[in-house]
Length: 230
Image (cartoon, rainbow, N blue to C red):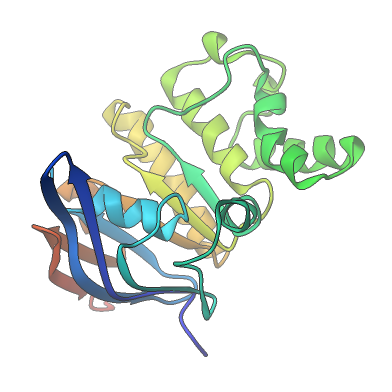
């Protein structure tokens, strides 16, 4: 069975005026279904660029990105948008919630763009909201939520359309220690359900709690290690 995601000799070069900056330097890596992986590295290591490519938010300059065995590296914007909407869920450090929408309305957004009927959108959204522990807050706006509750809402939105892959960018970065542990517990439950999760972080303590740890430095893979089962 092929990996869910696979990068093959991927390079990403940005042009800034007359200067060319290599963010990724020919990396090759694959992620199997059900893995929970931390991608770590210092600022400028390429981890955010890798996440953008894996999330179909950007394309590599060269190399292949195989998602479910299909090379998506050269697809057009509309095709990439459709893949993002159907196959990938995003959890952002800054939450990226729409301020004037309620918890349930924010959660419904991926389903709205997929053309799901209103009745089904509400039912599926409420199921996701309950799963993350926000059932009593479903009619509240983001301004009425704590930081941890906003992140729970962001997770509900990321999982409502049952994506095969969940990408989390510093999901505990803006949270206190206790709330961060609560969010990690939710991510672990998603992992237990068989979801494939990639967590981009600079937090070594968080990374050490995940099954696999990939370290990037200067646009290359410095280390790729898995926990030894106890």
